[in-house]
Image (cartoon, rainbow, N blue to C red):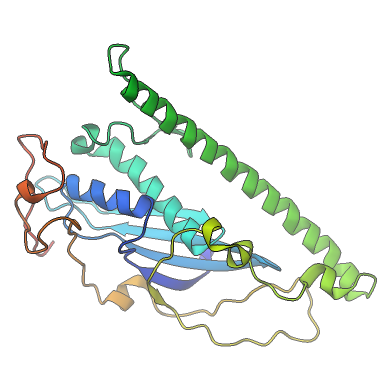
Length: 277
């Protein structure tokens, strides 16, 4: 994972609002028995600019004929955004591959297409209730809206970072005051944003970051540094998976779908008991 930067956090994203919570619901319904695990990597790009990459590991389903786990990666401008992005990506992939997720209540969720970054959606028949047709249109429009915002954000950050590199030479030559480029701090936009404009908080295990002094004479743009580490998701959790449970069911129930929040299960659906892979 060196291409994504250095590891800064591992988490199972318990009780995180948004897409991670919806993904857990899908995993439960799709007969997965263990929680997904997230590894977050960071790489400084420029003053106030940090790229975060969230790598997700979903253990294989404990059902006959299933022999593979899932590994996905998504980019964000903060830890919260990266986690939301990779969870949304996993939702669309699972919708494509898991038959149990083709049915209600997930029929309006995105489906991964062959074109990267573009999702497909079910088109309700004309005879479907007006509510169902409008809900499908709303989710499809919001997905496209997010896709366009991501593209604009990436391009804006790329141009801004190029401008920072261009100004850096003038700062080092004393032609431009240092505060123009570096300001009073190097906080990212998300770190400075009010709470109502930030992504949901994520609790996890943070990888220690030793204090690193910035050299007085720099040969390039000063960026935020993240320490290299030998730690990984596997070493932090010791290879121990955590049982996936639904918040509104008996945590001791590991087999019966009757205790689940959703009532209309297909007749062939059955939760696999927890146990070794």
